[in-house]
Length: 386
Ligand code: PHB
Image (tube, rainbow, N blue to C red; front, top):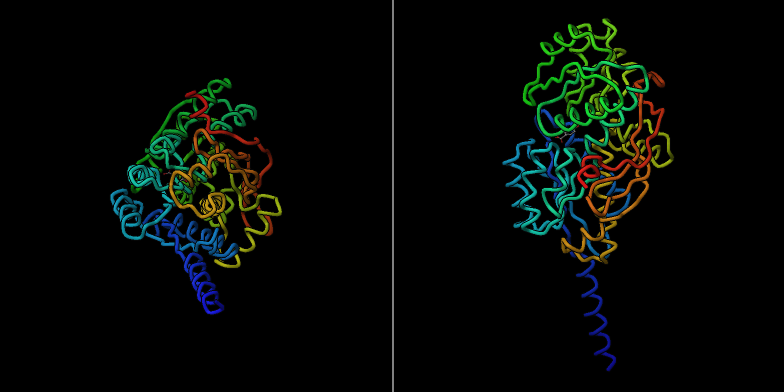
């Protein structure tokens, strides 16, 4: 009797041990090389920080992170997503540095019923490409419309828009222009610059001739420094033309290297490393300690993407099925380093504060200093479609 009890106790312990040791793979697909490598670097660092701070055990499972470099090429993203699902049995895919890569993974997420947590790409329509897509980054309409409202209220009447020629740029241009016109402003010209090997100089020369009050810009994270350099070289600032945009152009990964030319640039965005909250101060300090560089808006979205996955797995008590995880993600609310956030249960997009910020020098370093908050902004593209 005693021996039997002992055996069953051992068997039970072994069973518990094997359940506890069950690995759950999360695939992070980001560009680690090429022109968008800063996004991969930031996201990987942030996801790893989240796991280091919260441990790798969730609801009796051990979380295993697998990082893959798609170089921001959609055909590679698709192959990596397929391999992660089929070979590694990944229960969630995360990352997606640019819109075409988020699109490329969508059919795999749908077919395999695996959540695709978009932590970077920001074209509004992305979450409509699969019922398994959830987003923790932002949308360009969400960031662009508030910039137009601020510009119209602050004496800016004539604007030229200049954006990178693909999904998020088109969104930025459309939502800035429609909001600005509704507010009584005028759009003098709308310019699009190629995504690959952008050369802004010839376009900026044209802008100078247009003599607008301001240039509104969207360029993807990683391209801001080059844009700023050419803006200065073409003498637009000296000609009295203001620079405004979504915060992608004054990305925390690059802003400090832009020099004094960036001072005074006003942008709207959901995250600044300078955001004044205890959660952000702790996040920035831990991130800088672990990595030796400042987190940007890609990092905060990666950090929150992993937070959302941990939350969902906890809520399902370890059930890793896609439908259960997605159901648990809908309506999730938490305090991010960026401020309060929520996953809209209808659109699976993030609802968050948008901040108006100005580049200023603090302790010898350039930061986007927030000075106005538009609370809990939903993606206006989806709100308009209802
Ligand atoms: C995108 O491709 O959707 C994208 C990339 C970088 C950004 C914003 C949007 O900063």
